[in-house]
Length: 117
Image 1 (cartoon, rainbow, N blue to C red):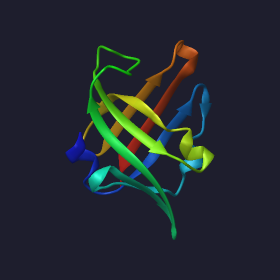
Image 2: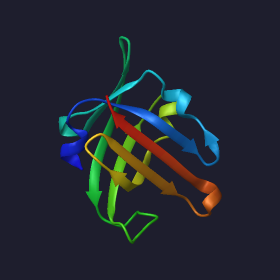
Image 3: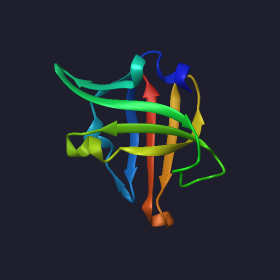
């Protein structure tokens, strides 16, 4: 997973927050998953800094069947804070990563998809 995301740049092609499609909040942003767990979202000359990591633990995971988490953290702006989570990996290829987060009931399920540029 680390090798997959750390090569090239990525864009959000799907973001469902509970039942609301909020993909458009990330339109035009290019995401770089850099070394040292540095995550950068860039649009034009504007850079938003965050962190990312892949952890192999289920201690804080909503899905103990899959102990691998893809962690994303931004401190601002609010749209980016919405994707802060310990995401479960649904599927991944060299060009697409599909993530899910279930918080309690199925009504509280978030989906996040990155595709390589």
